[in-house]
Image 1: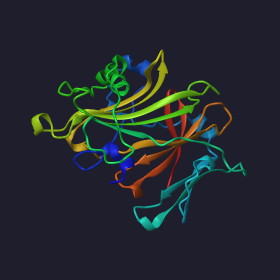
Image 2 (image 1 turned 90 degrees about the vertical axis):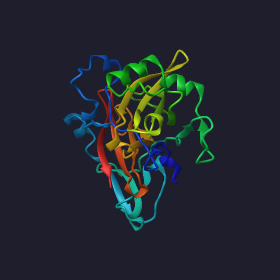
Image 3 (image 1 turned 120 degrees about the vertical axis):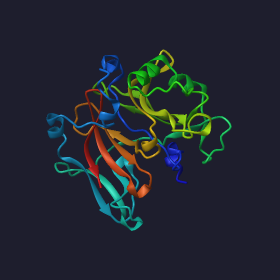
Length: 282
């Protein structure tokens, strides 16, 4: 198994996280009529932002795969076929020099105590991660999104967490914050006592450390449903950099699908408290 897809450990072999919520400070004002299922994880940019970044795109070139995120080069595929591999490069119509980005270190996969690791880099989930996932702020959000499930317990039913750490200017121009990106899943794909529908939820959050504790400023959650169990994509941040000089970083992320050949790359900007897609490839 390709361990980078280890978050999908489920009925079909792999799991993931899907839909996006509002910034954490806006959650409490959500109407019960606003379903989490109606919102995409990554939004669309405003016309002004789209116009400002319209010259930037990810251009796929078939051939040898190059992985040089600091230069805006990322291995990719143009189709489901292994023979259609190549490199997606971040380019601009108005810039001749190569782009300079900051690569993001790979994520760490945390698994439950006692579970046999699928990769030698897997780690046992830490007390801090479990305390973060059961915090009042996260619990309030999960409840507001109607993704909570009284049958599951975070510590007992913890399945997996994928954690990335990186420095990025999201919310204030040129002010880098150390951010933790956590994808996690709580649940049981076999249902209560090994029978019935899957139960639990999947979630994604961005956290910063405040007074020694990880606190969320962006969260996403979806309740597990039988028809959608284990079939969702998730995102993995590859590099960051300020492309338009406004002091707010743009990001390149890989959209992880069930098979590597189905993956795609997206260029994100940050607007109104969340990521928006500027361009995708192939």
